[in-house]
Image 1 (cartoon, helix red, strand yellow):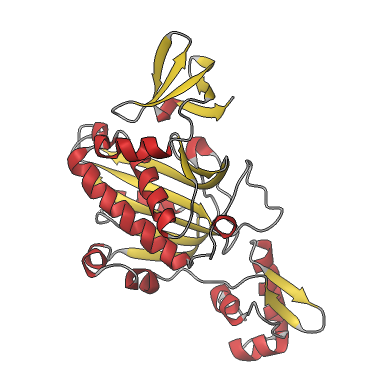
Image 2: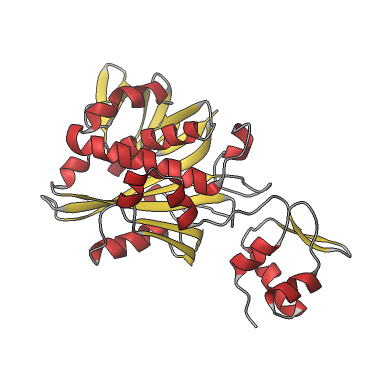
Length: 323
């Protein structure tokens, strides 16, 4: 007998243990089936703990991603625009799924969410680690009548929108590390991956992928210093509320970006720029160079002073690390 893993997680509690017998009776399966599914959930990073002689409990409450709950937290006008919202238990990647959907004609502002990604990724092919229930991972599709050149600065615009949404959720001290990281005290809180397709001269589309650390389990290896909302918010916000706020801020930003470009966001980005004035090391196709970050230009490209020379770098061919 198979068990819906989401149903099992929702049957568990954080305030007390639930016995395997009670879980089996509630779900209409055997205790062996419960044990097997519990083992799979724990392997996926779910916060399920075994309590000797009493059963199983959660280290913290699990809130499943729910399209209806997310839409209920949006204002009526935005709710009408975000009609195409799909929640998956497990897929390869929310970005990959929306890229497929976009090629098949998916409507503008389609949203894809997933509890787990088997091939989640960040910029330059890096893996995005997302233990079950510990993150928020979703992507949004934007279509553009102009060419891909009109998308310049979109990753930074998405960063501003994401920072504002996380501030709406109670986060403080947020900085933006060019071109796609949201950080707090030098630790990564969230990341953005923008992937484009279509015609170079238009029409084209962009898939904006967002991953947010909600509550990282102790000992999880993300490959770099990381933090989460549980550590920086006085009260941990609901996962569905986080998605709703990010979606609202992102759509608002995209509307403005479409008419006014990156220039409308330059001041908001500068206020959160975590690199400006700091020594940086630029890894570009031409090699590795050290310099001092000097903000971004009108297109959103990074400016770096190498001695008396001012150079600019596009996100497509450079990564930056604090020197």
